[in-house]
Amino acid sequence: MILEEDLCILHSDEYCKIENDFNLVERIDKGDKTIMDLKINVNQKNLYSIFCKTGKNGNKEDNSKLLFMSFLNFPDGVYLEIKDDCIICHVIELKKNPKGKIPNIGKQLMSAKYHIISLFSIMGIDLNKVEIYYYIGYVRDDEAKADEYNKKMKMKKIIPGTLQVRPQKLVDWDNDIITSKWGKYTFREQFKKIKLNFKQQIDGFDYFYEELDFI
Image (cartoon, rainbow, N blue to C red; front, side, top):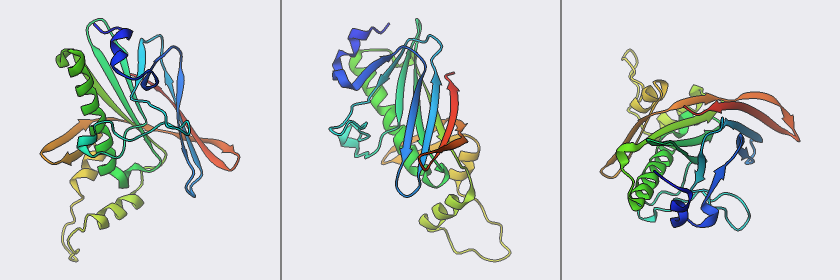
């Protein structure tokens, strides 16, 4: 249904075929020295990494290629798994403590979804034969960031003795659902949480690691 030469519409440095198990690594340097390492178990899958163009300094660029949508960010990884009867798209984002960054993560995943839809539309592929799965890897999932999120959303003043309702985005998060809105577009999708566990310190960085088997 899809061949490697079909990807010629992408620039040569925007896709590659994954032959063996590989690691998706996020290095956080801004005063919070953390390395998040997610190993992807390929298991002989016919898998392609797409939208992975590198910048001049050799790092992956995360600016959206759909400039008209004004998304500044993009997920850490988008991978196509080619099967005989369908294409499965795996979208991955790594965040140390994602609970306070839910709106931004939602936009990143939403951007990936529309990139995928646009790509396959250009290629003339039946979107009914395309499945998209979302994964979010994290180190912590506590309420500290959620409190910051509540303040940013300018919640109404708390009245003593009244029942406090958690923001819907946090309720959705606890149920493995992430939402985002951009103009008239609404993104609401199920995702899989991946807890990365502390392994050791490497050159002053806290190193967290986990393995993922694609669905």
